[in-house]
Length: 473
Image (cartoon, rainbow, N blue to C red):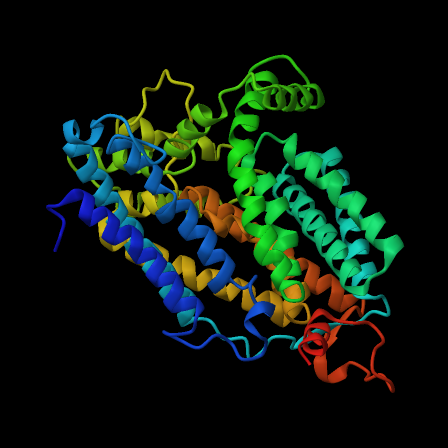
């Protein structure tokens, strides 16, 4: 209705994503599962995955559009947008596609959101939750290191075990805090600190964001006031310093000859000493790499005017990416396949070294326009809920199922990726989760709930849900 007024159209679509979040998370459209309080199911897809997906796609675009309209932060400096009305119109069109994508993802999640079979199988162990997660973290780290030494086609499994080790280490720290076990808090805290340092030295801002977000989300069921206060502060500090830090680190380590540890120290020194214009660097980051809308605008401008929609071609390539290279030696390189779309549409030149791989929503648009976005994102939301439900059914419920397994293996669904990457990663993540379930069944560590022996006395361990209820009383 308001497409002819680009700025108004953009803001209606942008605010629409907040409306969708509020309606779904509060249970206005479909009540949330009644097996747990809201604070105890934040890690389920309809809450955290939806929030992260909407943030990475539909919400962060505000900075790009403000920049088009002549603003730097909230300071109006030049009427850039007035001279580039066509660019603003394309951005508004992209935002309308984003809110369609968000609505479709949310609808898919709600459609398959049923946890009646959560905990059908139980993990049988005498270990407390803290020790169990600490053991999982240690074993996953060792297995991941072993797979790295073996090399070959085990890359996907190695990455998944590394993610499993990181999430389990955070959970071990959180449960140690809940249990108020001093020595274990110190031990798991040191392990978390090591993971935080590794995330900082990875050069990927998403890894550092995950390392900061996870403990806050896991602590929320018990320490809600603490997380409500500390969470926004942590996010503000992240957005203030990490973009500038990350840019310096990459220039020193990725593009220069400085090793990761030295680059980390030097980047921190430049930030603290004030040598870097943090505000200018961050605004460049917010209007560029923080959001994908700038790249989406380029693809909308090219397709279908200069390049027709791809139809089922990208889906077919995604299916082919599932074939192991050991069975198909000539299998095309996934990176090259996805980058070919950037070259064919003229988004970037073939001689450029810039990566411009289309993300999930963009690939859906390239395949079939608005219909492609609706169908692909509906499937995305349904798959997210199904993976979470399956993890909870196989691994004893919410904490090992969704909080650990789903978060570690399917975190890609927080942001999405090119179709080929999504299909390959999600397929092999599910295969690995199935193998771990089968191994647990064979070892007698996972049993049907009705076959698990019931203790004669209630467990002495304080679970977060019981602790939260006792505090409320």
